[in-house]
Amino acid sequence: MSVRTATAAAPSALVDEFAEIELVSETTNPWTPSRKASSSTWTAGAGMRGRRHHPLLRIRGSLEIRWRVALSVAGLAVIVVGWFVAASRAGSGASLLPSPMAVAKAIAHLWSNHTFVGDLWASSQRILLGYSISVGLGSIFGIAIGTFVSVESFFEAQIGFLRYIPASALTPVFLLWFGIGESPKVWLIVVGTVFFNVLMIADAARAVPRELLHASYTLGGGRRTTLRRVILRHSLPGIVDAARVNLAAAWLMLVVAEMLAADKGLAYQIVRAQRFRAVDTMFALLLVFGAIGLASDLFLRWLRNATSPWARP
Amino acid sequence: MTPTLSTTATLSTDRRDSHRPDGDRPDAPRPDGAKLVVSSVTKVFRRRGSITEALQFVDLHVDEGEFVCLLGASGCGKSTLLSIIGGLEEATSGSVRVDGDLVVGPGADRGMVFQGYSLFPWATVAQNIDWGLQVARWSKDRRRDRVDELLGIMSLREFANALPRELSGGMRQRVAIARALAPEPDLLLLDEPFGALDAQTRRHLQDFLLGLWQRTGTTILMVTHDVEEAVYLANRIYVMSARPGRITQEVTIPFDRNRGAGIKRDPRFLDLRDRLAELLG
Ligand SMILES: Nc1ncnc2c1ncn2[C@@H]1O[C@H](COP(=O)(O)OP(=O)(O)OP(=O)(O)O)[C@@H](O)[C@H]1O
Ligand SMILES: [Mg+2]
Image (cartoon, rainbow over all chains, first blue to last red; front, side, top):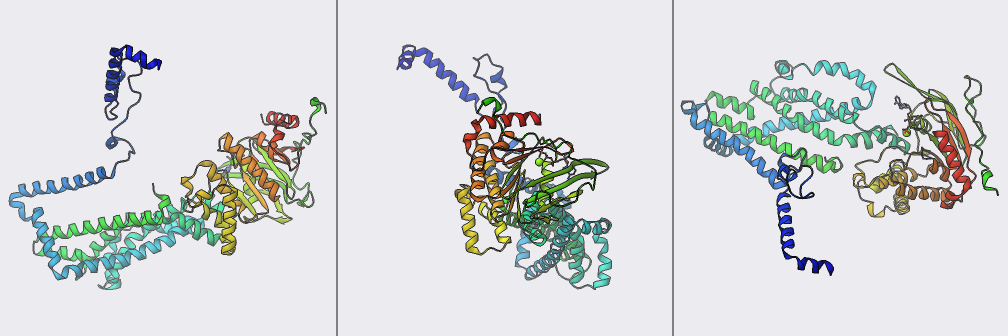
């Protein structure tokens, strides 16, 4: 009651107070650095302490999903626009750098072409087979190496030596050994990726906290139970991560193999397009590679989060 | 009844000179019939040339149904000793016997609660508690009943399906205790189970543990560096010296099993607490 009468008695003071509140709320617009406010001549308490940065520029900030999507689209748009500009300025070089429109046409043409699906399938099949073997071997050896020091010691020198032999340099050897059928291509993919997978999965197995192993043991878990239900379980997101990161190397090996000896496949078609100087088709195929890569990346991310929601950052 | 002469506790057993040359005493279980007997355990860590002597001729025993606390400054080897008893770490010399059997490795008979958080992060609260039961191949019905019982005891029913990372520190520790208790171990080894908790949660869990011990009569060996906690809960207390860890005192607490928070105002309690605190420095 008394407060009310007091303010009513001094309306001008009330207005001033509001004015100040107004000012303060303006400056508490959180994205505005408050240097002005803190060095102001205003009454104490009207300034701000600390600084809050815009989410876009904050270290480890979290962004709303619409911002993230917008930025991704913007990132892609930069490439497309740059491409348009480059192609339109190419002039006489137009036969070497096709415009995005020409490539879009080439993609449509690829789709209507009945051999394309066959090529796509041939390449995918090689990747699926070769890379499954690689991830399988990588898991077995990686977990064993990360778990048993004896196994680690045995393989350490071997792997350290073998993984520095460029797998692509093995192509001629593999062609000699396995002929020109599917097997050299599949094995090249295996050899080109398995060491990366082993090393990354071994790290994942080593990262299992010792206390979890101890907990398992003191709850009656034997070695086998602990291996399967603690080490493997805890390494699972690491295995999927390894598979996701090293998948790019599998495609690299596939392209090397198909360019040297193949009669179908995406990379084979690029070589063929080169013969006809069909630059737009070559670019179309490159885009197909990119799209497959993006799709598999998204899939493996989803798989990681679906199988190990507890490990989500 | 004179308040000045208030304690019957034996703070007298000074064991400072108890370490002795090797082979002086045979490796037999000393106090006959004890649940756990630790004899002359020594542990030396060798690592990249540096040598750490963590434990030196540690002797202790825990009787069936007894609650024993191990008190000592940080780094004096309490966790190391508990790991050796749990079979997770090998002693450099000496032996650990449970019911007369030599401990050579870990097992479900010695349930452990660790100093850090050791819950399986992918498993829900109920699955964590169920873990040991599944390993021990209990029947489905028995497992469900046991998990439900422990969820009730620990007031965790609401969180049965939560992941560890969704729990507070005190709740996680309750899950860890429930998980260790679930397969009904003969001996419960607790490594500073309430170390990281606030005073209130800590008191709550102490009372809970006391009640549990009174009801079930499980044999408990608990590491702590909280003197009051030790006096409140234990039948006996072993005090360890700074590194290399040795048992320097053995204190028998003059309260029986059926104690309550009331003893915290007992002059003998206060006296013991103060003298132990002084010992630890
Ligand atoms: N694996 C190890 N390798 C080398 N030294 C170790 C190892 N584990 C423990 N130590 C050493 O042994 C000593 C005792 O460690 P321990 O963890 O048992 O102490 P603690 O009494 O449990 O301490 P706190 O109360 O802080 O938990 C320490 O000096 C530590 O550095
Ligand atoms: Mg410790």
